Length: 86
Image 1 (cartoon, helix red, strand yellow):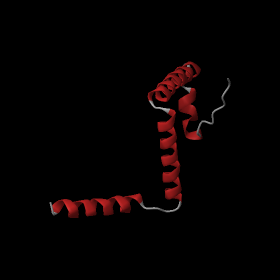
Image 2 (cartoon, helix red, strand yellow):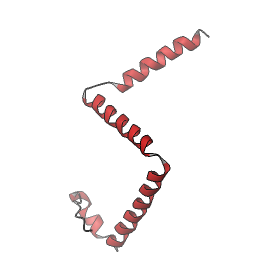
Image 3 (tube, one colour):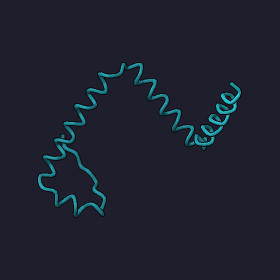
């Protein structure tokens, strides 16, 4: 497998000075592949599908302008109001 990566201009000089960059990238990719395999085995397909749907829904909310910070602030305020009465 061959990959072509676009290196940002501001990093080109620094990256080109790294000895054995190809070997290092290959080691990094090998490690990431092992981590991904472990992740796939750790969670069921059903759990991964639920997480994927939640991520998509959150991205749609963000695109639609939903304000999560305000929502959490309101939730926290309501929680405080309820627990202060206990």
